[in-house]
Structures are given as structure tokens and as C-alpha cells.
Image (cartoon, rainbow, N blue to C red; front, top):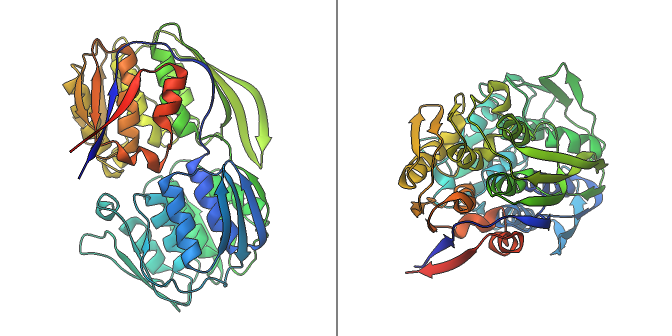
Length: 439
């Protein structure tokens, strides 16, 4: 068995214009909603990464005709809310927690039994956060003794809407329950402790489904409606942009333009945090694409300083913290993150894995139960292990722009789950990086 290693040389500047891959969160949802809609849904900018392809393959296995993807273009021939068919076997979600959690809500309302499984990383991730409220709605879902996948979802259950207060801010749990609510009798009402990404709510509206907002943190829908196919323009993923925002901020001489990036206000925590640290980031040509705000992001090198990250920004940047930890490692002074225990149960324990990697590169990084304390300083070269976590791998690749020696990042094959072509695009921008397969 071979392992993919990234080898990033020190120094360099990031310059030019980049078109980044499509937004992963929106791509997942577009396939799901398109499959459950009546009529055809067309999309451009679909992310052809392994995570989103797992979602696409799952719906094909349940009888949905999907044309493409071809250069980001996809056409989904919807079968309606009750048109899915039993798949011939378990549905493999690969590394995608989004696929597994959101599809649990859809499959809880079907007439047939299904099994959701995934790779070694996904089958370690906590699933009770969705199975417990789904059970309250009337679903029947079996998990392992530890509450993880595989999930065995029994069909033919009668679902009933619930009022549910999320114990922690989670767009995946919120979206799962809203999707189950499409099949439930009565109203499903979700209240979150802090705002999270609202792609599901925007997409419901785009597919013509009535949704009710009650204040800033509660959303409700009644079951029994219908979705109508539509056209979706998927913007570039701000989570992918985050690596280049950090790299260009850190590398002297950088001046980079990232085109057509989604800047949904529930996702822009990474920009707000970097600006608080002193980053020079401009949002140019703001506009709407398919109901989602987009802009071109211009980022230039600027000296960064450490901060205490505001609690209200944590859920708005939860996926971007590996990159932000690299920014903190190269900033002047101390950066403190608290309230981010969710990072412990991502594709890896991102708090511990990033702390270990930064320590290996000579940076003082002290993990806490819900965050990290980083003393900015000089970065040495060295070898780090991504533990198969795509965001960890790409973050350490960007760290090389400020390192005094090359950085080798092990176990990088999963980068294709969210950012196919990362190495090629990073080279285009000016990063000296290569891939190496080792036994």
C-alpha cells in the first residue's frame, strides 16, 4: 500500500488569478435536493471531489438519473420526494460526514431499508447527534455500540415533526433534521445556539419549498410539500480559498485574486478572523449567484498578529481552523482559540493533529480541551503527519511559504475529497510543491 506525501519547498510568493473548485457544502445539497425535486435540476461549478461524488453515486444507486459531471456541469433528473428506490446494497459515503449526516434525514423518511457506511475515518465519527433527534421524530436507526456508522436505517416509519434545540451549533445536524422534516407530519422546528451555515435554508427556498424563520436562530418547515427543479451556479468554496488567503497573507510579495468565491455570511468567519489578525483582504465585485452571495477576493501580504478569537466567529470558521492555526503560528504574539471542541471530531482530531504538526515545526502550540494556544514564531522545516485529513494536509503545505526548510506532509491522498487538483493550482499560484508516493 502506497502513501501520498506532499513535499513543499520553503519561500515563494502567491500571485495571479485563481479559479478554485466549487463549494462542497452547496454541491452536496444540490445533488440531494435535485434528486428529491420534480423536474430537472442543472448545475454549473459542481465540485468533482470524492466527497461529493459519493453523494452523487448514492442517489444513482437509488434510481436517480444524473448526467455528468463534466467540467462541473451536472443535470439531475428528480424523482420527487417519494420516488427513490431501494439501493442494491450499502451506500458507501467514503470520507464524507456531510453525506452521511444529511442523507440520514432523507433515508429516515423512505419506505425501504438502507445501510450507510464509509471509510475508517468516517466510521469513527459521532453519529448520535443525528440519530437521537431522528429517533425522536419516529425513525429507527441502528448504530455501533459507540454510536458510529455503519447506520442501519429502517424504512416505512411514520415521522412526526419536533421542536429541537441543538445542543451545539452544527449545520449538518440542522440540515439533517430539516430534510427529515420534509417527510414528517406537522412542523419541524430547529433552534441553534449560534448561527451556522444556511445553505440548506437558501436551497429550500430556491427549490420553492416554504420555510419559516423565527428570529435569528430558529427555522421551521411543514412536511408534505414539494420541491421543483431549478438551475444552480455553485460558487468557489471559501473553505478551499482559506488556504490561499493564509498563504498569500504570510508570503512577502504576494498579491492574489481568487475569483467567484462564495461569501455567504454564515461562512466568512475565516475572513473576519484573518482581518482581525491584520490581513489585507478585499471583497471585489460582490454579487448574487443562485441566491448565494459571491465576490472576488484580493489578498496581499501583510504582517499578522496574534488575537483571542471571538466566540461568535468560531462556528462561522469551523472548517477553516487548520489554515488559521498556520496563520497564528507565523503571527507575532499569542493566538488563543476556545469553544471549538467540535474540531476534536472532524476527519481527525484537528486540535491535537495540528498541535503535533506545529510542534514538529518548532512552534509552541498547547492544545486545550476546546481549542489551542499558539505562540507565533519562526517555522522550521520538518515532517508532519496529516492523519489522512485533507484540510490539515493543505494547511501545512501553505506553511512552507514561511518555513526555513522544506516541509514533508504525510498521508495526503484524501485531499481529493474536497480539493481535486490542489497541488497543480498551488503551483500555478507560486507554491513550490510536489507529490511523492512511498511504500
